[in-house]
Length: 216
Ligand code: BG6
Ligand code: MG
Image (cartoon, rainbow, N blue to C red; front, side, top):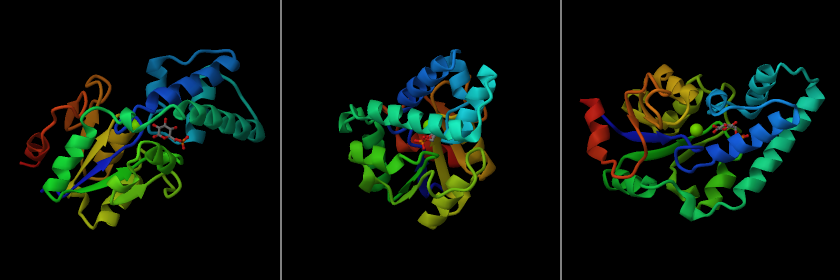
């Protein structure tokens, strides 16, 4: 029975995924190689330092720990600069309306993000108070595809994992939800998000009944 919805942040609630990609791509370019959209899929849902490791592997570049820390900090600074232009208008279409349906049906709402910037981003889009719990990159020890992020969210909300739906745009995130025993709804391309219980292109016109149907 559906009792809670756990939302990923980047690429699900707001399109910050494009800013993460732009910032990583320019870092790769600085290092002398490119980062394609396909390669970028591997970075989604993955922590900052793990993302950097994947990128360095793609470019076949080896750096010492200090340089890596500096590059990750530079990427984050660039990312946050890009995020400056964001306003509440940038919440992805249909997200607020869908959450209104959840509130009306007394279904709990939580956030499960790998990002250490999650609260900052939520403040930009004026959605901090929309979530009964926020699990972000500052709280977790094991990133997606480990289920910790979402299990913590379910625990905070006082619901069983099997009564939760996770909305995710990342392959690692869908795996995390499945590993936690939750229903996984992919947001994006069905070809990329294989393994989801359902894939939607977005929240526009998404009715709660469609999600509840996944529990029957
Ligand atoms: C995830 C993004 O939500 O957060 C990843 O999908 C990102 O691309 C990760 O690397 C960590 O984010 P941050 O903001 O802590 O660098
Ligand atoms: Mg995401």
